[in-house]
Image (tube, rainbow, N blue to C red; front, side, top):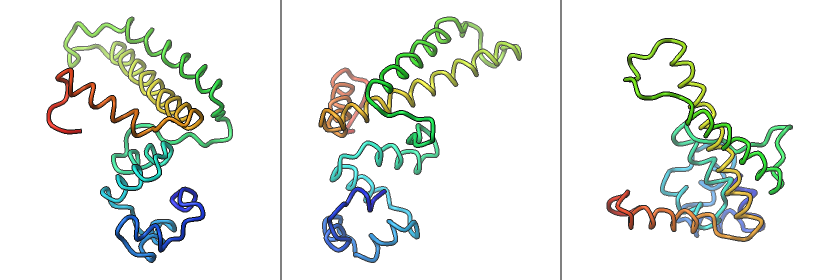
Length: 165
């Protein structure tokens, strides 16, 4: 993916941009070395590539959406929008209809199955939303990283985040 992002830029030039060597860039591109988190942040800022950002987030945490690239995925903005709306409706329906009033450790097996189904739908909605944001940002030429920066600033302003992003 890094090779795709750098396009015509040489490995040497990219290495100089991110304060590393051409050989190290080659290792990153060929999967012989994992891109360190500080370099990943630099690359996300430099290329503002949502696909890369989503991939890195998943690679480092083992959680969150993976970039959808299977044979059945359609990443046209209209398709992504429709799928996102569908997934959000399904998730919201289960969230609304799943009772969380009892302590979760006291739930019966069938009740836990409902909670698990709700969580699975929520994860599907998150994946859809992540791709929706990525696709719309790319096609509208809106900075993916700036969208997130604005969000973090709003969270800080509302008192939901302390310190810096």
